[in-house]
Length: 234
Image (cartoon, rainbow, N blue to C red; front, top):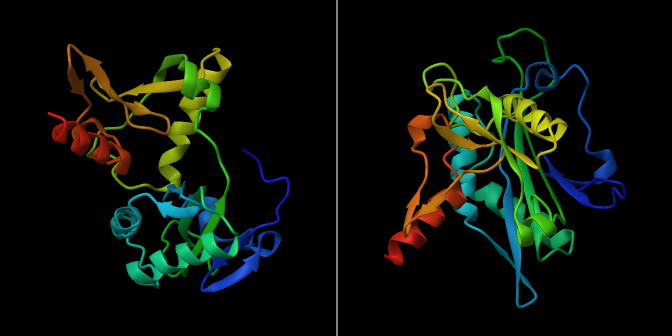
């Protein structure tokens, strides 16, 4: 996935702008300290119409992540949901990937972010299977990363924050350097936690296993869906 065309529209602080015009200042707080929270949401083509997967749950998690990092998003959850629908419509998408991101903007620099304003942007683009169509069909090679997830008490892994993904980048780059498609991260105690960008399940003897939230992992919306479906199927 790349952005070579840059032909889409982005919602930015209440306005629809051209993709190339959605810019921030290089001295914005988020550029220097990673002060942002975001979501990764899928819309699927359902009989020629967009069907967004668990939109309200994703936006609730966005606001919960912002609350953990003491960021006050200047819109309501309902307004963000409507803005996402607007972005899908104006870009003429049915199936697409949606990225709402709230971030600390431009005013001053220093570790404390409180005086920097919070902005919100929403982009959408067509993006296939996360690990590629071939990986979806044939499986992928996964290597256990030498990097560990931090203990729950040292870092809020439950928040989907940009800064958290520096660890994911390290694990993913290490995996690719060693010839793997993706990384599997262990927690601070050496137990399986999650991938660099996905939750993990294991099926053995008809039982589905997945790490608990105490293993320093993100509380995935898809993870929750899999567990609910599995319970319904007995």
